[in-house]
Image 1 (spheres, rainbow, N blue to C red):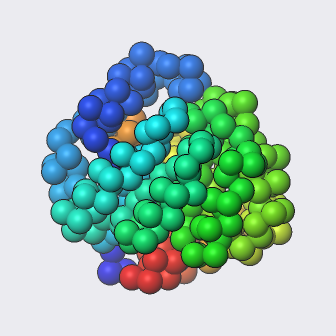
Image 2 (tube, rainbow, N blue to C red; image 1 turned 90 degrees about the horizontal axis):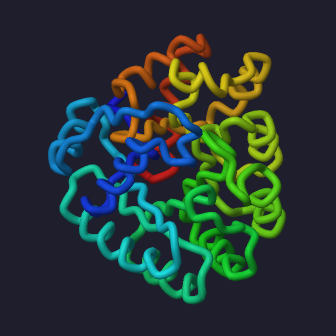
Length: 276
């Protein structure tokens, strides 16, 4: 492989990221009560350099608002970060609020190549009428959205397959990348990917020892995951992981789904999606 394509890495303004780290340190409710020591608590430049050292040729800057009024300025920061950071795919975000369609359209016009939506942290319904034109715009533009809509590590008011399933029923061409394989509702989200051909899944934290102890992937569903091999993408959650980066790769390798599947997941599928 020429390298890795990691569709789920976090870069955000330092003061925002430090608040995220403090939340993990304090075992906030959305961590599911899990001890979560951050493995790569370093400066922004060092983190980007580490990814390149790990062989990552393209990565994202997943950032997300937890309240109205944040998304627009986060998008401004992310555009600047992508412009000065080799290998970063220009990332943007959104929230269920008035004006979302305008700033999402602006981000697309400014060159955003991927969006991040976090239903759990944002505590909004993805099927909210405020977002309906946003999903339509993104579907028409063909810009992928990495979305945390599963109920792990702790459920939210609008997590699970139901709300996002209603979005897909309205916008079946929307390029959704379901984070964490939809943990813990793995099989429900596999079913959505089997039904909607533009739905993809990312591997973020899945199959690692940390997650398998709490939300194990059902081994009987591995053949379904293998069959979706062209729509599974590598994700890591770097730097907010409690283990080494390579452990995610080892966790995928030990599934025994073969070199072709691994190559597709770790590089080819992401390279194709983003035209690398």
